[in-house]
Length: 259
Image (cartoon, rainbow, N blue to C red; front, side, top):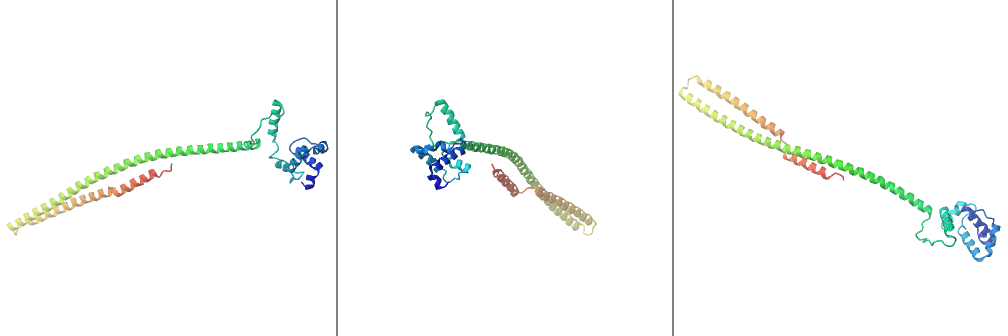
């Protein structure tokens, strides 16, 4: 709006009628209210209202409404004011704390914002509940797995103890076989030596040699069988380090679950 309009009383009145129309009011002929400019208070009011839109083109209705949004009533406010005036009469309106006042348009925006926040919060709560349920199921599954693995570890320990006992028995049997073989071989050698002294040219020496060879073969076979049993038992044993590593892995898996 040009400075010429701001200085011309009639143009100011014309601008005022444009303001009224842009806010949804009636179409007013500027000539009908031109007299307002002859009253000091009226002129001051018109000048103040027109100054609110001095940077807006007269044909820009949206610009008028935007410039006057801080001082003009919204439709809901106008309707509320009209209804209250009809009930209580003019001049009986209660004072409003403008520092705490929120216009209806902003209240609607806040309601929409709160509804969106409530919807988002509800979805987050739903997701959180699902995560909690999944965590509980995972915890139960992990506890079941831990119990099962603990049982398997205990069974492995029992099997190892049984294998250790069997190894001890096999070692004793092995020592007994070796001792018996040595003792029997010594007896045969002594018997053979005595026989040779009594009958140096007799034939029984072949029979003694055959008996010695048979005993040797039998003891060798027994020793090999026992040694093979011991080796097989060792292969079946789980080492202490393997059990410890498995326990450490299970302990880490238990406490690294994401709750």
